[in-house]
Image 1 (cartoon, rainbow, N blue to C red):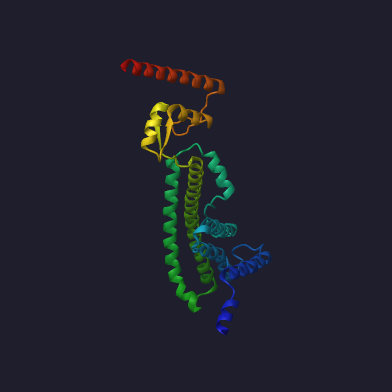
Image 2: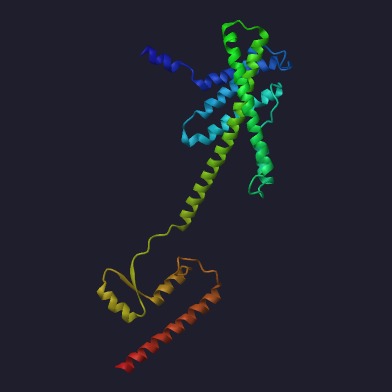
Length: 288
């Protein structure tokens, strides 16, 4: 019981991250005027806090809040890169913020595909980052044992922490690139889902009940007795019913013609159908 209460009292990882960030902000106020060479080696390692927060946000598995977690992780990685660029840890191009990316999207909306020059420059930048990553990892493995055992001097300790910062710069750039791609996919998926739901809501209609469509009232009486469970409707009644609702019989398409023109067409149709009925009755009388 006591162990369970102790577990409940333990602070959660996000709270620890927030406390560490507040302490780091206080240290930043004190040592804000110092450049990178005058900062202590231990202070350099504390900049990794932003990358740890970003990595923690990327590990969240709630599908409903995935977009929020990605934006949160991107903010932390971008904050880390901004701090590293402020202290001139390495030379790199800072990723675009949300406002800059939105402006570029509106400016380049007419371009369907990225230019070949931009794709080639991105590929070359990835190759350079990969080479730098391998060099940094090789140098870190050489300094790790000496730093952890306490045998390294201050210069090698500083170099070790600087290499760690440069390693996380490459990781942060790769993470931001993958985050931007995933955010684009998620937003496109949400917009497609909203469009499909709105379109289905517009097109949903109650199912039509089966009925017997006849040419005239005489046929309706004949077929109506044979199929008592089905309603018998003549062609005139069917068109009049659709005309009352302002839609044509073919798939419920709304009429775009004006009211006087519609009335003329309906009157003309009735005259034609009445003439056909009179002709059929005259033929039936002659045959008899």
